[in-house]
Structure formats: C-alpha cells, structure tokens
Amino acid sequence: MNHDNHSLEEFEEDLTEYIGENQKSKDLALPQQSLPKQMYVLPVSNRPFFPAQVQPVMVNQNHWHETLKRVGETDHKLLGICFVDDLQSDQSVPQSDELAEVGCAVRVHHAQNKDGNVQFIAQGLQRFRIVRWLRRKPPYLVEVEYPQEPEEDADETKAYTLAIISAIKELLRTNPLYGEEVKQYLSRFGPEDSSPLTDFGASMTSARGQELQDILNTVPLLRRMEKVLLLMRKELEVARLQSEISEEVNEKVQKHQRDFFLKEQLKVIQRELGMSKDDKTADAERFDARMAELSPPEAVQERFNDELQKLQILEQGSPEYGVTRNYLDWLTQVPWGQHSEDQFDLAEGRRILDRDHDGLDDVKDRIIEFLAEGTFKGEVSGSILLLVGPPGVGKTSIGHSVADALGREFYRFSVGGMRDEAEIKGHRRTYIGAMPGKFVQALKDTKVANPVIMLDEIDKIGTSYQGDPASALLETLDPEQNKDFLDHYLDVRMDYPRCCSSARQTSSTPFPGHCWTGWMSSACLAI
Image 1 (cartoon, helix red, strand yellow):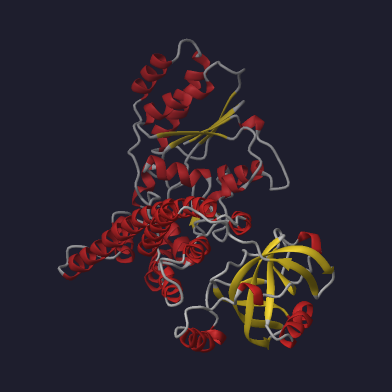
Image 2 (cartoon, rainbow, N blue to C red; image 1 turned 180 degrees about the vertical axis):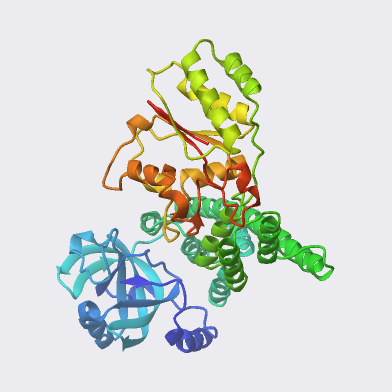
C-alpha cells in the first residue's frame, strides 16, 4: 500500500501519454464546486500524497480491488489517499481511526491488475479533511470538506516562492534524479502557482512520513512555505554532507586503486627486466636456497623435492598452498647436518662449573666424570645423569654450565602442566595452526643439530584426554626408541641419539637430535 517515487516500467508509456495530453491545458484541477462531498479513501504507508503530484501507486488487490472498482463506477473517478503511520506491511488492513484526518483527492488513471496487485496513476488534485465516516470497513467511505487557503500578503508569498525555487535548483544540482520530476511539474504549473509549488517542494524531500503529513495538514500558505523551506534546507545539508562523504570515499578508493595498479605495473616491469619474481617463484627459490646450505638425509631431500614441486603447481589463493608453504618453511629451518664442535677440556669444564656454582662438589664431580667418559669415547651419548634436589638449588642453572663446558647452544623449555602429547611429537599437518614438537622448535631456534636442551619441571608433567606427554617424552629420550622417531608434523624419520656425537659428523645420516639425557628431580637436561 505504498506509492513509489520511481516510475514503474508498466506505466512509462501511459504516463508519458497522459502528461503529453495535459500539456495543452494547464488547468488540471477540478473546479472547487465540482469536487464530491463523499468519496472512497485508500490508505498509503510510505509517505503522504500531495496535490500537483502525478505518481504511480500500487496496492494489494485482495484488500482494495473493491474500492477501486467502486471508484471506477463513479463519474468523477476521484479517490481519497490518506497516510497511515507505522503500517506493518502491505498485506495489513489498517483501522479507520489510524488514517490521517487530512488527505489528498486524486484522479485515478489506467488502473490494471498484475501479480496480485492493482497499479494505477494517481493525479493529485486537492486537500480534503474527513468530516464524517460513512463506512469504517473496506471499502472506506467518508464525507469530506475542502479547506480554503486564506489570503496572504503577495510580496511575502512571492519572496517565499523565490526561496523555494532557489532551493529546488540547489537540490537539482546535488541530485540529478529530481530533474524529471521538475520537468513534469513545470509542464503543468509555473512559478506563480505558489501553493502547488510548495507541495511539490515538500514531495521532493526525503523527510519522514509524519513530517510530510504535517505539511499536508497545514492549510495557510505562508506557514506551509516556512515548514517546506525548513525541510528543503535540511535536505540540502544532508545532500551536501553525503556529497562530501562520497567524494572523500571516492578519493580514497581512487588512491588505493591507483597505488594498486602502479604496484602491479611495477611488478610486471621488474619481472620483465629480470629484477624481481612473483611471490610463488620467490618462495620456491628461497626454500631451495635454504636446503642447498644444509646436509639433509636422502629421504628428507626427496620429501622436500615433492613438496616444492607441489608448491609450484598450486594456486596462491588455495588453502593447500599455505599449508605446503608453512611445511617447507619448517622443513628448511631444521639444521640438517649442522653441528657445533664439542669441547672435551676437563679443566675448562671444571673452571666453568666453579665459576657458575659454589659448592655442589658431588654434582660437579659427577659431571666431570661424565665429560671424561665422553672424552674417552670421543662422544657423549647414551648416558643418563640424575640430579636430585629441592627447588632453587641450581638444577636448571647446571644446564647452562654444561652447555658452556661442551661449547654447545642452550635451549630451555618447561613441561610443567603439559597435557598434550602434540607438544612433544607435533601436530598433524591437516590441523589448523599445526606445528612441530618442542624438540624440532629447539633445533630451529638454536640453528644447530646438537644443542643442550633443558626440559624443566618434568616431575609436574600431566596426563589428559589429549594423550600422555610423559610417554611421548620417554620415546623421544630413550636411545632404544628414538632411532626412528617420527615427528607428526614433519613426517620424516629422525635418529636422535647418535647424530650429535663428533664421530657421527661424517655419517651418511647426519640427522639432528640428542646424544645424552640428564634426568633431574624436576628438570631434564638433553644433550
């Protein structure tokens, strides 16, 4: 039950023909004495209808077909249109007391049924006020009167008229869509028609329906002009603000697009000149260069080649591309075959232990014995050293001293409260946010294959539904089990216990890992 400001395709030809016929006669309004005292009324919900308007109207056929049928049977073909505020939907039928008291008498043209609706062209004629209800159920029938406009000062009226015309011209500059409406109006009225011009100016605004109904209720011309001029000024301010916002947004979008196109052109030019490569090629070359500096086992090299070939085939927007890229990033940051040289100087080792710790002679003696055994064998691996003591006696700091004595990198992480075995053995690559286990991360951070790794708070490790990290830790540290350790993320075999020894440097399988494990009461030192 709304009349639409936009012309409907079905009415374009009829509306053009109708306006063309009436351009020959400017006096479209019926004489005052010929307007009927009784008429059928139709509710509209979007905004009220004004005199001097010619707009298409569409209503629900089920509710209002009978009303339009009875209007068509009259000689004058006049219908009253009244505004209804807060109508829930076009399917609703409002109560009679919900209709505005003041409405607009319109002439109905070219009514037709289509898709369950009735469409017609409404030509606004005159304000009316409902005096008495003759029928309070559809089709609504009322008795009306037509209020007369009082005489106004001609000079003041002319001044307001010129102000409204000026506001209309400004609206035309801010919104070209109003141009066709102005042409239709000027084809029927001139600037001297102050009352229709005022109503037309109100109909051009996007004010709320209740504000426009207040304009329709105002019969005195000067008061109506004041209200309409105020609405048009508000409309102009909104239009200017919208124009400024649109210009600012367009400027930012154009700048962004300009920068984007310039950057793309620069990439193409640099690529043609051989100065740069696309992201996929750059990633592939960076990973290939990393692996070329390492000494990976044959199985790892084959896996790397397969994954690199897959990366070059995948599209950059594919989710699999990101997964493969992250995997190659981790695989090439593991220090395959990169070892630090062990220092088996017992005197230097004792000096470092004495420098970092006072007392603890029995602990120092046992560590020196361990280093002496490594000196005799040429490597330190396969031994378990247990230190027992309460918190704060220096169990963790002993790890720093041992790393300094051996000349190795040191890495510490705590397993206290750890309840997920994936922290030890890594996540599956198919999971979002998957990462390798802590040991692989230690190798990446230290950049050598034989660091000293401190596992702190091992007596506080836990068990949950996610697995038993203590069992996974045992598998990692036990020399009989970790010969073929498999990190779930990297998915390549690791030989932890033997690769760190100095004698293993020339081995054909220089895989990074751990050569010695020192168990403490609340910390584990893996060397």
